Length: 149
Image: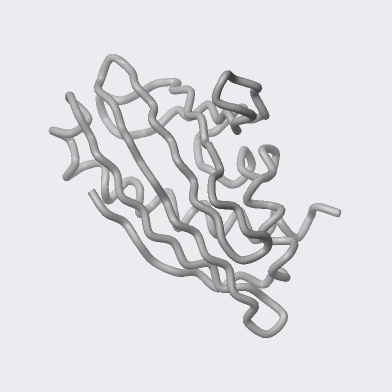
């Protein structure tokens, strides 16, 4: 499954980049995310999100660990995640590029996810739900990013 797009936000590039790595900003930006924080693991320091999706049959909550890789502040990062649960697994990589755009920033993303199990069978439901979640995310993210010091 692939999802890509771009979004212009009225947040300076440096601030937008920092906000993408801030668990509190992410918690308040993702829909149905009551908890987020850093967690030290054998793989390194990861961002842990607790997500409770609204997709029928996938109630959760699910622990999602985000691993930022190839971080080049303030223009690029790759975010990797590989959550597994009783409904299957997801192996996802998302390339994120940030470009200054006047007083704001254009965020361009390209994600590729390999789904297995029941979650793979529900791709027709999941992709539209993810696209709706991204719209919600960017609306909230702009507000949250502007609120950080």
